[in-house]
Length: 401
Image (cartoon, rainbow, N blue to C red; front, top):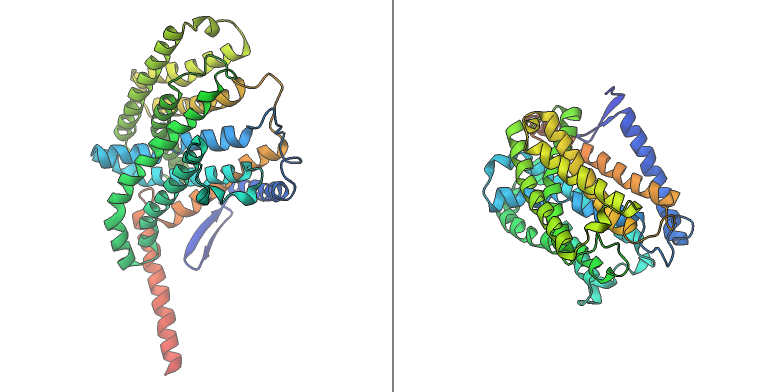
């Protein structure tokens, strides 16, 4: 990647590249679309109607975003609860990816509220019989917990040693609490569809939907960690040992195999095999989802192909795309008639802009904090900052004399 310029302002670095320049342009377009949406409502930005109230922001930004952000809790579960210390080297990258994912999910939820200025009402109006109320609170609390967990990394960089000491002490408590809320809201997102039996295509509706959503968020979490580390390797030369990625992927694949068996049992129990092979759009999309998102990845990960880095990467990308397709199918393919909804330009711009903003923030944080094993580089920056501060302090004292 050709580098145009590396800016260093007040001790913080950020590299400008052609790709990042384009991403910044997407963010600028997103800002324009968001302002238009907040000022005028849905009319000029989205294609949402009373008949199609769930659009791209719910299906992709929220449903897919929450699932893909599952790497944080799945990694914490393995390292902190099951004591799989060999996976510690990926925890910080998984934490950052998860935190950014949840922040973008919160942004998507905010934009999808019709009267956005009433976003604060769930904090004071307790609709405890609503699944969405539980999802709102769990996502809000878990995002806050992730922010506190990431604060440990921040206090390392900004030299607040006393504060860092206290953050480290409460970190185990935060991790334990943080393992509870993802289980609740990941499953509850599936529970939202339970009342839609008459509206959804039979291949996607099931009493097991909360379990499906929870299980898929776990195995896609490890896949996202592999994808993130692969991209970090290309951008920063950061490489995780193959045994680590293979071990995590196979643990996730074990959960995915159980997910697949449960799906097959569901089809047999409800006698719905006829829908699978009827040749309609819905049945074809279901077959694509199962073949490329479940069956082929399982073959890859439990075959000699997994011994190569390319095999792990192929498995991870297929799992990620498979879960994305599953969430989109649950919202669109299973409920909306063909041609009844297509995302508006504004919806696409906002979604692309949110992803671009997440990538830019990720790059800035990785280049300035010890996240992907760049502890030595960050320490050099800290030492330089110390030298600059000492020099300024010396000059000020000299002037006073």
